Image 1 (cartoon, rainbow, N blue to C red):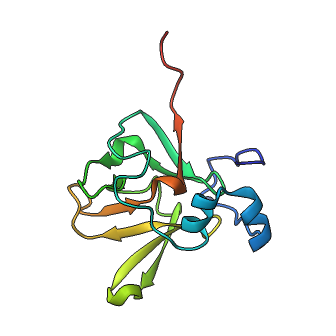
Image 2 (image 1 turned 180 degrees about the vertical axis):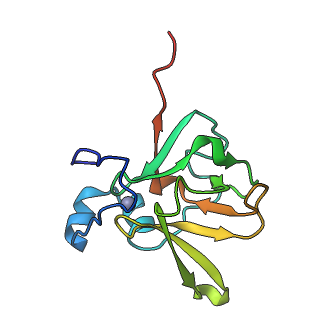
Length: 148
Ligand SMILES: [Zn+2]
């Protein structure tokens, strides 16, 4: 869980969160640790955010950094929550990933360097990008309480 209060959202470049492996193991569930710190991928259609459309912001499960808005979420049919763009170009960092004999672009949280998923150039307009994320790497913060 997120321990410290959320930083001001106004700052452009998120302040880095650097924890030891031991601290990450304490802070994250085994599933979260496996994805965020172990660069794992949850099984397709196993994630809790596949097919959801609740208004709100998706933040990093590791550090609370705001990553994606619900308005940019779309159904890719892949079995992973997919977005056309992050909340800002500073929210995520991209890295070349040549594992498994594929040339992919890995997406990490810019704040804690946690692995989130990959971005592919086959998304819908306006960006043509598909940010293919792991549900366990994200938490959903609703915009406002639901009416009774
Ligand atoms: Zn993070």
